[in-house]
Image (tube, rainbow, N blue to C red; front, side):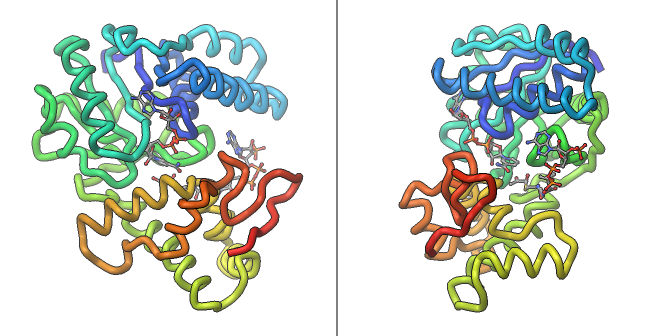
Length: 292
Ligand code: CAA
Ligand code: NAD
């Protein structure tokens, strides 16, 4: 596979999880954030998740310490120059991702593979803006990364067989089950999952039932691990809104359109569990539905 050092750009919900599983799987990992504050918050998230795994006896303290020692944190993009694979997990915006990959393209060696964890953008739109579309793939992990077993490995019509195989082997090496997906917006899972979440918001707008009752309905009625509104808060309302806009722009189908209520919740800065408020208030022991 020929991958030893992995760069992870963005240490939010997803980047922190990706960095954690890569370090636990014996890769050296360099994590880059935009500022010291974001870097510290990401570091804390990784540490907390690893400590929790030790408490639950899923990881030995010795293995946690070894994994921690393989992680390094930086705000300097130049520190990623020597990475064999760089995985991007920054905000869901094409311009921001392309600006980042443009910088990396000038820094990293010929053999470095670029991967995006995007939920809804096409990999081709990012790959085409670099000088290495043949060494560019999608590696779409799921939240929470340490728990969810799936990775969608996305190849574009320009991705080389060698790049795809290296990315596929990496996904297995970090303990995931990879599936191959075509480069269409939403890949496999989000094509089905995003309309479901948006539909739950539309049913709420129609007054079908309360947030709590819709969540209870889908959890107890269908055996889903969490209801759609808990899931929205879990994914991030800001991220879901961007995903919805991108997928609607791509397909022009109503099922992907952001419902007005979603836009209003974003406007209020209620981004979900990560900011303490979304469809639910997360400040207490249990999430409590907020007015909608
Ligand atoms: N980090 C590490 N481990 C975590 C974790 C986290 N953030 N959250 C939970 N866990 C672990 C716990 O340690 C626990 O492990 P054990 O069973 O071995 O003790 C296990 O996960 C279950 O956790 P809990 O008992 O605390 O809670 P739970 O039973 O309610 O499960 C959950 C939590 C795994 C998140 C579960 O509710 C679930 O599967 N929810 C659905 C998640 C989902 O659908 N994710 C996909 C989101 S969409 C996406 O990712 C794509 C996109 O592009 C937007
Ligand atoms: P997040 O908001 O939790 O984290 C994004 C992080 O990226 C922030 O900490 C921000 O400071 C940082 N960042 C922004 N620009 C940067 C740059 N140029 N360099 C370094 N860091 C930068 O978002 P997230 O939920 O982790 O999502 C990240 C990506 O993963 C998005 O593309 C999203 O669509 C995708 N994704 C999200 C989920 C989910 O459930 N949240 C699941 C799968 C994929």
